[in-house]
Image (cartoon, rainbow, N blue to C red; front, top):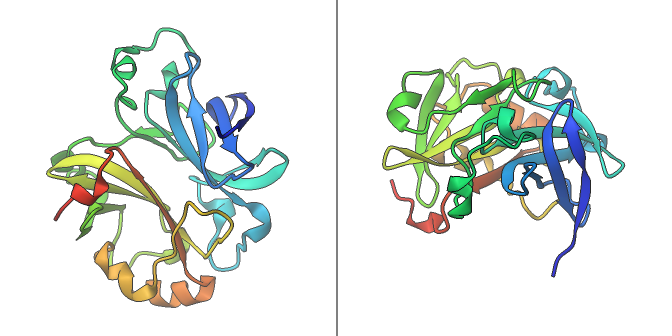
Length: 231
């Protein structure tokens, strides 16, 4: 049996009770006051971060935190309404059926309630927002990137993406500029593979890739058989 180290309950930048496995801050699980899974975080040790080519300190989605004594930059997503995580009035019927949650919220700022945005469940709704349809990759689905354009500013690139299959949200992930090889839960796509999920590829991206030494990505799926996700 694997043991998890409990961190603490947050009422500041984050909401919920967090657990870290073997001090691997690359994946942090968030639970609500009733003990149900409520969200997820990815942390990157601040000692590995270089602000020269990408301003982590200015990208609102990254929050600075200390986890188990490790200074980290954190990305946060919730699977239930953040307002209900630390209260007892949330509807738990869906979770008692072993469902993960009700929807997806991405935290883009220091306020876990005010800065968390609800993500469209249906692809047709995403098409009406600033999320831009990218490429479809088998076993992942159709990728969506926030405000992605050919002339996007890579120094302000949004570090998250969505994945849809058959018109419905089936996952999401983190896409971080730089190669951060400290956890087994990430992958490092080569530059030629980027066009397989990012469309269009911003003109600044190839140079940025070389400047920062690569990309680090993590995929989080809402189904148990991602290999069935087809294009």
